[in-house]
Length: 175
Image (cartoon, rainbow, N blue to C red; front, top):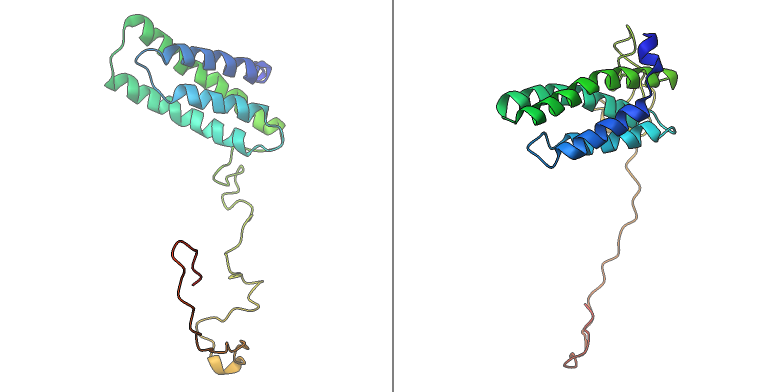
């Protein structure tokens, strides 16, 4: 673990971005270059750990997609070697970013999984106040209507439309 903590995620991301930029000229996975550009942004954004969590998850998923892409497409030996190198660089980057997330006080838990706590913290409530604490102002389906006073709405007055003068040609008309 000391080896992973000593890795610099910035240098790894810049190297992977440069390699994926070079590979984008040839027949290679097209998602790697934009992914690593987002990774540079996510790693530099210290205000929130959410972009870094998102990038770390996407990086892990892209490694699987790289393997599938390599089986379905053919490349020259040199390009295949560079693509495999990029794939292998994703492993220490994934681990280094996971360590960086822990140092920021966050966990890799885009799904709300924190250690053994599978329920995760509640950070949202049902819209419209349909929670056990906030039922004020809402009527459950089984409650009878007669217990509530009728809503007070202002009654709109109906006016008869007045006749408009004939329109002048070329002028704007009001409706």
